[in-house]
Amino acid sequence: MILVAIVTYNGLKWIDSLLQPFLYDRDQLEIAVVDNASTDGTPDEIEKRYPFVRVLRRPSNLGFGAANNLLMEEVQAKECYEGIFLPVSYTHLTLPTTPYV
Image (tube, rainbow, N blue to C red; front, side):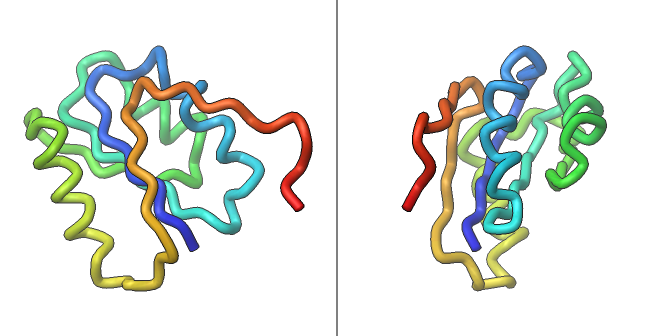
């Protein structure tokens, strides 16, 4: 299992390009988002469009580093991850044209 840990703040315009590539490997991933008190509806839209994503809402903007640390503390108890991927919320991921072997 791989953890995809994302910090957002008013990232509504980027969530589809960031999360859609993970639709195909959901059984091998846990995706968690810490939202830093967005005012553009980011956490609501993530929950609506991607119900498999765990959203942790913060009442204030912790900043990128502190939000990542909070997320790591939240999931650390599991200790079952083979790896952790920390993309920035405006990352654009592209699927490969050929399947993995």
